[in-house]
Length: 390
Figure (cartoon, rainbow, N blue to C red):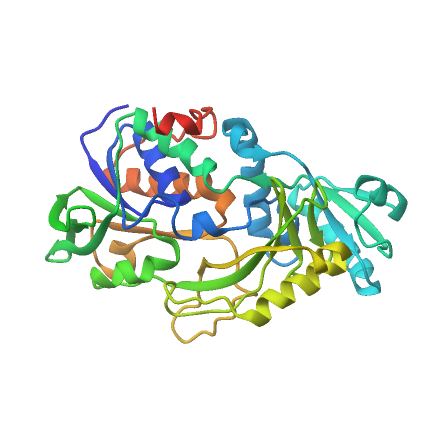
């Protein structure tokens, strides 16, 4: 179904990629602007875990259900960006073993398939694991290529006519009488400014969402929550490893090609452009990773970096804590929230829930225009990521 509406998407990460794909699939004219290279923000810096939802099955079941739902959709529509290597939740201590009862009950409630393994069965699968482990639970985790997955969405949108503009930064909004009608853009390649008019603007900038909405004299409750990840040389296991405990620092190790990525820590900041990589967090990743895979504690260092999660923060008067904030997502229509028409923001979520986040966002867009166009992104296999360049 075609329509004549033009939607501008701000943000060239995974969420923006999925939003512009969904928009073009539903017949919208769409333009995306990104201040840097595509996926150069949080999207290009996550550890690449295709969550089964197990990590959230006890305390954040809404996020857990979103993860397992999108997990199986991504397997169908973007297989080239995934390694379906499964995952293990590993119990090392008495406390871990005791936690397994809550974990298994939560997974069952959220529809996450599990298989309990004895120490012998676990070590036959992954011989480099800590030999003192008590048990493990196999779940349908996997590994995502952080760059290729968004390129599947960008490629498909581009072949439908989407206008994708990296190195074009929004520096202001075209706004009159409480109505947004476009954005002011700086082209970093030419250093020229220009106006881009549209019928509606979608803010898909993740942890930068508040910086963007401030320019429109509105706000959104996003809380940037960075975490440090460490990559070491060597692939010491083939399955994704999680510590069988409540979410904590350094309790995930993701195999990425011939590297192992240990993550992550958690704190909160006001500015997602000022994160830092604290040395003590790097050392903590080695220490905690070594509790699951002893060899990793002394593995060759390859790189360390931080990325800011775009979590839904507390509303005014509430307190934020990075580790305890939910990993679900929410779409805000700023007409309803702040009486600013023509602007929608999508925040929260995970790298792997990008398609679901886009579906929710474009449903809101359609509703605002009085359109009844169903989402089909869960059905259509995406073009190969290489198609973005050809």
